[in-house]
Length: 548
Image 1: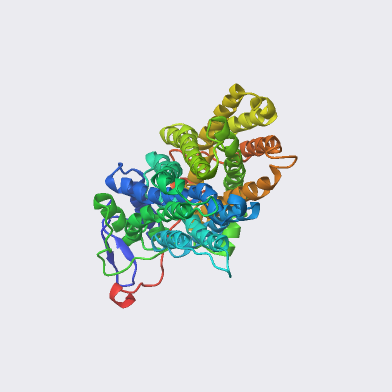
Image 2 (image 1 turned 60 degrees about the vertical axis):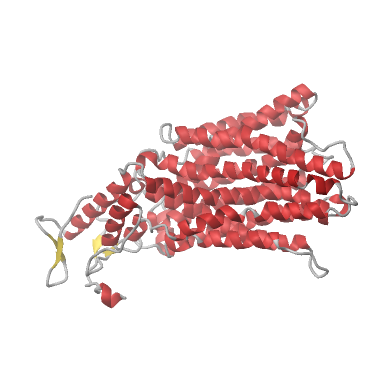
């Protein structure tokens, strides 16, 4: 770390001992030297800790989101008419979380830039834990249906999940060194794949554990054991979050926020040294807090910055790319019943309680296969190549491959599902689409917004981009869920796949608006002149004892 000895002069200015430079030049040089320590740091235990702490959050998010796909079937057996939820009930429990997530992404993205990453990190996890636990304890009464209660709690849980996106992205980005930043952020995001897989695995274990009890239920209309199943499946989702909560609450503030927003360059410099050495921050050992003048976030500054085409096109590119991707990413789930049937895990032929058990087991095993076949490998192939190939080439390749795959799946849908052997080809294409979503735009749309904006708007802009994606997810789940049965059960699915191909094509063009972020510092990517970025405060700052 570059050391600078400073002393306070009688008029309140800071003179750099042994150097003849202007105060502005001195501050800029100190900032560059401090941030260079972060950008050039070797991978350490602290970097691994950031990945683990942030990754557990995304693991929990994915578990909670994915578990409802299985839990909704269980809810149908217990509370639905005729053994299943009606279309509106099913849609309500599934779409409440994405709606809450959209709100949380915008709210927490903004708050993290205003009050700090550290102060907000852990708050979103507490919301998730409380809302998840509350779902497992929800009850049914004459005045209110349990589905309504679950919708409310899943919306609240979604707000917490939404907060995790900008916070985890920005914290992992701002602590990472330049050469491994892409891999750190991808490792955090890849935890989603394991969350999906674990939700299906836990569901399978719970169903197996209650097999004998379920098979000996007196009637198919009174499946008390299934009520235990969904509550356990949902409730266990708060366990990993509870484990990670302490570490989130104690993670240090990022030096870039301390320096560029709190305007405390001395504390930021101290944090960088101590965090990289032992992972624990300490208060700067100085009598005077050295404040600096930097561009401050405000509505006027926001409109000025993003009013420039060079900056607006980047925000539009990240937001629309995520929107287009999530329409297909979540919409592809509409085909899961077709895929499960094709691989032998569809609706069973057995009846009664045996039929209920077989159906639940098939759903769990089938989803385990789909997660392992397409979702998880794609994340980790991205991890291997994101810092060598770059973000933009991977996103571009992903959108191109998805356009081709959806064209084949859409226009060839009837022939691909005409025979059992052709059905296997459709399953292969489905898994390939999942693979190129994750080895492609699903990963890069998370990574790029966490790198490419100035510190004072990094979290806000990531939240806007992520919320745009979640809007696409809501469009897919609400809009296309209503369309897929036009003309008969799943008759309109082929046309939906063709619509997905169109959105993937538009994603190619939105990707072209984005610059490559590989190998560049966050300050280089901010598109702001770094010379004279910091200015000394003209007013004498108060001693710490007085400030406190």
